Image (cartoon, rainbow, N blue to C red):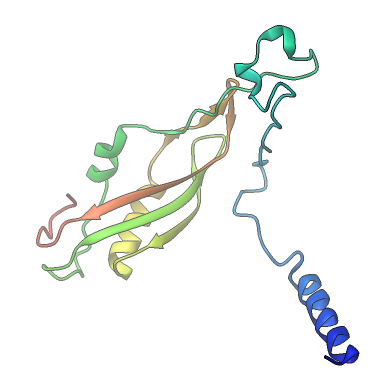
Amino acid sequence: MPRWFLVAIGAALVLGVLGCAGSSRSPFPSECTRVSRVASSPAAGQSVDTVPSDLVPDSVERVSLPQPPNLKGGMQALHEDLDYPSEAEEDEGGVVHVSFIVDKEGTPQNLEVTQGVGYHFNQAALNAIRRQEFEPGTRNGRPICVPMTLPIRFRAGWGTGPQ
């Protein structure tokens, strides 16, 4: 293979990487900071919580597992707040998956339909989740931002409400 060809491919790869740098936007709101994974302890790859206290250096903070957010009122409250789209046909239905981030105050942010069944159903699912309140997720007793995905089922033929 000619040397100039290899140089051209290398330059294209470098320019492609530089062009993509900074183009991806974080799905986390600016007030949410990502928590990086804690490296395992020096004791045979065990996590800090499973290693006896005398083997863990004082400088290592014990980190508890994060507690996920809770939907106030549960899924029942979400389904009661869900409006079956009047524009939908009687034989339509399906499951809409909505991904979002529950911020430190318990408010859903950055809602996105990751799997939909049609515009009207997707909008009904987004609107219902926007109106919900969550107890924020916590780690070590402090609120944290947590990404979530909820499936919302619309049953075909109901026309009056969700399943």
